Length: 82
View 1 (cartoon, rainbow, N blue to C red):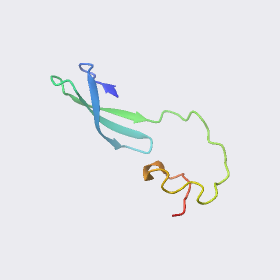
View 2: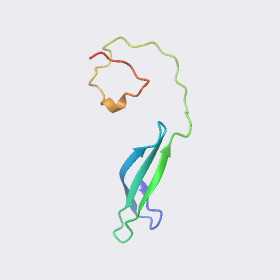
View 3: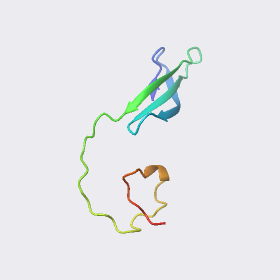
View 4: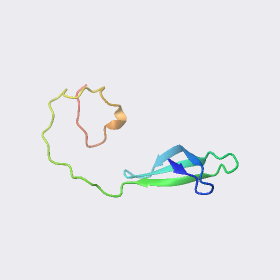
């Protein structure tokens, strides 16, 4: 959550748009009725803190396909049979 850069009140995120695989632009609106400005912020990956170790593939069906929403599966995820 961001605070309004003009008056310091709470600002709500109204929407966001991906600019790349690692950067998102968020659109915020100040909740102070007298101010009500709209502003944007950028959220991006700064650096990776840990490294992923090589691992063995899990057996098919190990994780049920409905265990997580589709948005949780990126391009480098397990392929689960349906």
